Image (cartoon, rainbow, N blue to C red):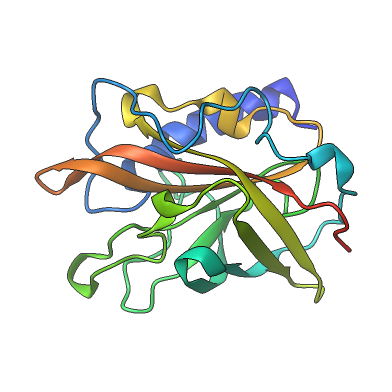
Length: 206
């Protein structure tokens, strides 16, 4: 479980993450926009309580069959200025796991982020994240050789000014996953929204 002090730390980190999550800039929109499912309460809406939590093991790859994602996963921490690191803008874009969150399959919200676009290289690894629907499968491959399969519970598109910090980083009773990128309309080079996928570990996980 995440302590109040850790939650406060993550809340600060989230503010920085919103600036760089997936595009050249990060404007803020004035209102929230509904996604493919209503906002969750304190869980993804999937049967997290029916799945047994896994031991700690760093994610090394992520597959999302419904949108054709099969990407290596790098570790992300904090930059020298205190902002959250993001994956580099490169031709071979990949997702990044925020290492101050639980690893996929541990109790709590594991956070993975990726770009929606990567400048002159075109589409980012999470370009089609908003297309996911409830029940779609997400599989994190872990360093210890096991896999952690998740089922999407909700997808939300929200204005960056209204980022739901507590829903994303707050305590939950089971193993959950959050995928985050930018999205929505653009103002110049800046995306106005964040796309957030809420998922829970599937029952019967190893």
